Amino acid sequence: MKKITGFVVSVFVCLSVASAQSRNPLPSNAQLKWHENNYYFFMHFGPNTFTGKEWGDGKEKTSIFNPSQLDTDQWCKIAKESGAKGIIITAKHHDGFCLWPSKYSTHTVRESAFKKDVLAMLSASCKKAGLLFGVYLSPWDRNHPDYGTEKYNDVFVNMLQEIFQNYGPIWELWWDGANGEGPNGKVQQYDWRRYENFVRKISPQTVIFSDIGPDIRWVGNESGYAGVTNWNLLDTAGFKRGHGAPSQDTLESGNYKGAQYIPAEVDVSIRPGWFFRETENDKVKSAEQLYDIYLKSVGRGANLLLNVPPDTRGLIHENDQKALSGMKQKIDALYQTDLLKPAILNEAGPDKNNLQKKYTWFYLLKSPVALNGVVLSEQLKYGQKIASATISFSLHGELVHQETITTVGNQRILKLPAPIRATEVSIIVNESKGMPILKRMKGF
Image 1 (cartoon, rainbow, N blue to C red):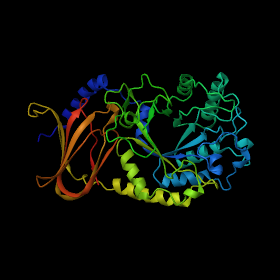
Image 2 (image 1 turned 60 degrees about the horizontal axis):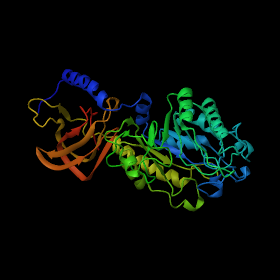
Image 3 (image 1 turned 180 degrees about the vertical axis):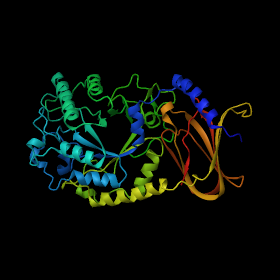
Image 4 (image 1 turned 60 degrees about the vertical axis):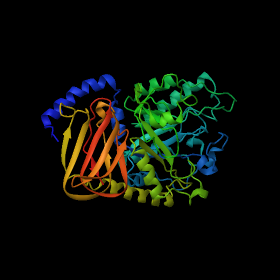
């Protein structure tokens, strides 16, 4: 096996970058930073927390919103302790209730029994805790009298302006594509282009989520997994947000030759529902279930948006806390020790002696280690490349296990069916869109 010197690797990389850019859509700086923060909280909170509904009808009395012990510092403390990098809050769900005292609605915390500005509290808590702050803002509004008319597009843009100017910086903006009748029986024609242009102008570093982006796409399900094959690319021509989006399998796997760089985000709830219900306190997902979700989302190159809804007190429930703590322990065990760190790494690219024109990474250990799996990551600055790779585990030169995977992307966690003793681990890329650039593999 020929070892490539640092100089040759550098030249090799530089030559490949130009060709890669001509073939593959590349992420923006904001998308690269988004990839780095690959696990964070979703928090559904509002009148539905007190009514037990998933979708409010907009007729709920504002007085019902009255958390008795609301503590956004507690939310952030638990998020940090759980390893989450930020929080995205439902600033306005389909019922139209605003968690801030918007000047453009009369259905807000200002009119509630609680009175206080929840967005201001959470934004301050996130800053203090060093967490990213994001906002879910449903364009559907089952309460606002202007919904279903052109005037409502003005209302929605004005609400966006309030949020970005008063509570920013906003890391991620989450758009739900739901669209139905308002209190006047009319359905709104959303001016998505206007909304997007406004956000780009007022906060260009904010990443925008919807089922087809423009920056982040929905993964196509709410069950907690990305596709086993997961491209960060998507073709959006001919599709619309909400009804008219690509099929579930396309959203789960992306498009191999997709024209836009729009990676997937996995949204899933720690409970059966999105909003808190007392009756679901014994149905919180276990630490093992949450860890499995992590492996099938972050471990397949997507980001994980885990919904942890506050209860009627305005606190994260004790049962949720216990499950999150157990999940964190399992994730820590995955990354804390790198069993391949002592290994000597040899790399080889196609040359006259590599007749199959394949890229190879070979890790050699002096003594055997018991591996439960490996973690692979591509350098996405130059685009996502790997379409197929074979990973082999050998003990003193004798092959003991082999697996073939498809995409790698931001992260690919390969959990082995049982611990395997190995002194050599190799990666051979069978198919790639240009030269693949892998970060050093980790073993756990």
